Image 1 (cartoon, rainbow, N blue to C red):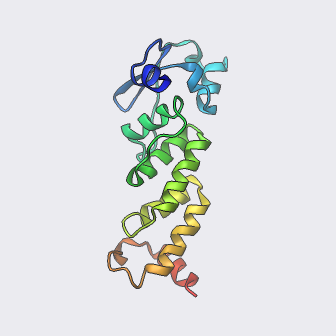
Image 2: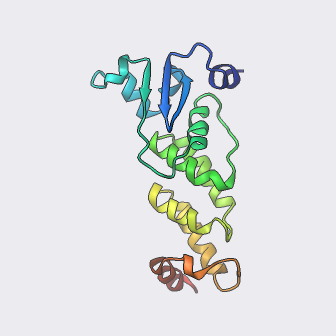
Image 3: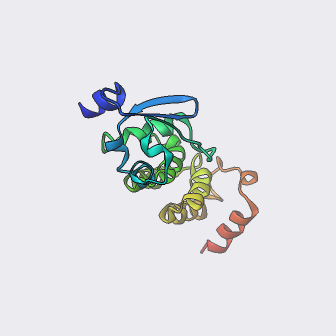
Length: 170
């Protein structure tokens, strides 16, 4: 009910958040679950604390509209479905807004879905966003599969990562 009524329908919204050419009718009370928004709305140093509409600059190219939708939706509903191919985008957005629960959910999804199609993007994202268990699992996956999995293109692996894989192989 809360997710559909307040988030999807935007009923009784007290803040419009604009980002990536889209507007979301949201609620400060829910947004304040994030340290990012909490300091923005409760701090006196921010002009946004008194505004009913704010625009958020998105400095990370990994953050897309779907990732914002999932992150904003997570304020209203604890568990949202995140597809393995969108985990990096949602992780980037969760990191921007300091959403620890969503970061953990993305980390679990990434760990459970490491494959030839995801390992390199997951590894790179794990370094950028500090999800160390994903780094470890992706490196281990590469060590175990680099010579036997024909779907892995060696040309897509950086020389740094390739050296790291070779050094880690037993």
